Amino acid sequence: MRFSAKPASGLHFREARRFADEPSPLAFTQGQPNEHRHWLPLWDEPNDRATLEVRARVPEGLEALANGALVAAEGHEDGTRTWHWRLERAVPTYLLALAVGRFDRFRDAAGALELEYVVPAGAGEERARRAFGETPAMLAWMQEHLDEPLPWPRYAQVALEDFVTGGMENAALTFVHDPIVCDAGEALDLGEWPRLLVAHELAHQWFGDLVTCRSWRDLWLNEAFASWMELAWLGQVEGEAARRLWLEEYRERFLRSEGRDLPLSAGWRVAGRCPGPAHHVYTKGPWVVEMLRRHVGASDFDRAIALYLDRHADGLVETADLVRAVDDATGRNVRPLVQQWVEAGGAPRLVVRQEEGAGTVTLRIEQDQPHDALVPLFRLDVVVEVVTDTGRERHVLRHDGRRMDAELPFEGRLLDVVVDPDGDLLVELDHRKPVGQWIAQALDGGDLATALPGTAAVRAWRAVPALGAAAAGEGELALLASEALQSLLAFHARPLLRARAARALFRTGDAQARTGDAQARAALVRAATEDEDAGVRRACLERLRDGGAALSGEELRLLRGRLDHEPAPRVRALLQSLVGGGS
Ligand SMILES: [Zn+2]
Image (cartoon, rainbow, N blue to C red; front, side):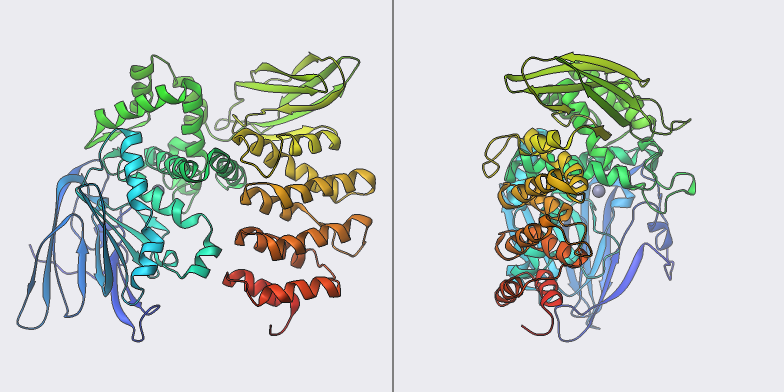
């Protein structure tokens, strides 16, 4: 069959110029969701699989990369070359991939697996390994954790200039966009994003590529697991507190997201209400995996996932298949959980009012999210921890969505009441409690600078907005709230939390300069010049800028001093804008 096409989508043409003196041609594909049809006659839905074979004849000097292994690269008399690639294992056709351009290619290995890091020509080995060099360790961990080998003998990652999205998990040939290819200073600005992206696309080789959603309605099965695995890898490298804080970050992104009231199971382009995949597959999705895992227990859950992958390898899945795998592996019925978190939309908004009496604290808990045909009233087990000077006690309150009152007795002096102290729930929490208790919640957990249990970090994370609101007020409590935030900024072990504390500080600016402002400003300047993490330094500088800080001569001197040796370009630019002019 011969045909020609001028594709409007699916196959994209660019010029690569970032790392080379001369621009050079670049072309790449993006199949998901149904884009290959624009340039290739094929079955363009995820629900069938095929082996892939690509022969691409391209001009001299260009390379063509496609899925699987290179069979041949045959030169022709006119200088063109035909690149012949083959993937033996059948995959859904949206995972077919082709990239043509000038590339630098570098090898790595993980056991018998062959890895390749492909970057734009001129970018060089150091940048390539900076972007992708963690892959062997990631791969070893994922294979072991999932108890299932990578589906292919070879895995290549290609960084493409001006790629259409952050990353795409083409079978054995992941594409990512090129900011991941950078020098050491730029990498500081990127923070944890490259690691998360590489791990996300790698995890898709199992979740999406080996086991595929039957239709785009069940896209969440691909994305929830890839997003959960990316954070699980982060937890391996940086510890549980880091993983839990990122989950918190995703919880808040989900709560802010447009389309949050759509069910996860509504998938792609639901009823025209979302331009792309409903974004909450990446944020609510991993939360559902996390809640399932906590519900059945970590080791049971891991067995269930191993069964799910094993049973559906090279096949198609829908939500019911996940429920069945968990049931078969653990004897636990997670259907009700899936019903309210996947098939229904939204999330509970819990308003908690509390009143302290003699020896008891009374809580009134209400769900006040607007509920309708899409968003239910949720059934939740709400854990409440009552902290006193004599100890702490936990209560589990079964909340069925209607207003409930609970009287919790305590002995001694009440220090704090913490709702959902382990951060188990994907909720928007509006707990109306005294500022002193938020301070206790934020700083409770021992020495902030040591590796804290993940749950203590989550409690501090959830206290920050209330402290920020209190610190913007007046009087002694405002000062204390501001000081608690300053402690988090100065001493907390996790950069994500330090940056969050910085963003909550100094919210009034000096229009009405108050006692606490100078102190908060000084704390921001100190962290902006001394914190080891570029993301924290950036958060401090943004806060100083947005708060309209009138900096003292000494503060300006400190910031100027930093400018001379600040390695992260985005932080440097912010410093420049604050101190004005050249360095
Ligand atoms: Zn993904």
